[in-house]
Picture 1 (spheres, one colour):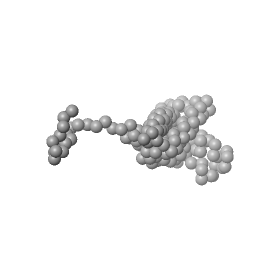
Picture 2: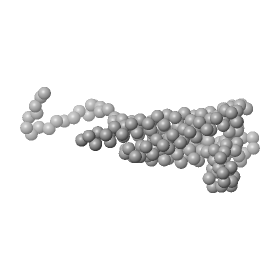
Picture 3: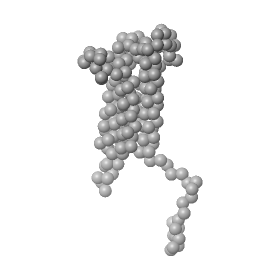
Length: 184
């Protein structure tokens, strides 16, 4: 081990790369996935609005009769998960397009990405679990009820699943940091 001379300070080399902490990687992944989910949700909202207002509108994701996102978005399940109109009414303020709920979810996830604490990571994980349960519910509706394949929907399900994995990693990471602090 080399000893430094008194009065001299070490100079770090600018080319030396320090690895990102797992917390930074998790935050970056959450932000990227949230941005991707937001873009897909905005596209879904765009398609839904145009499909409802313009007769004969054909979206880029409408490939044929059995692969049609506008068919899915304009179905009763495209608003309020097909449940809000049954629980309240079709005029309820809660009966929004599913993409609006997606936008709220991804905004929430992006906000919580900056919370490095364990309780915040648990809240983020619970939200991701609920979103994935919603994805499974909507995937079943898509396949069994609507008998359609929606590229946009499946993309959202994929983003939600990967976001769930990132949230699990965040909970594990923040829990480990909490344990380290308690042991000190």
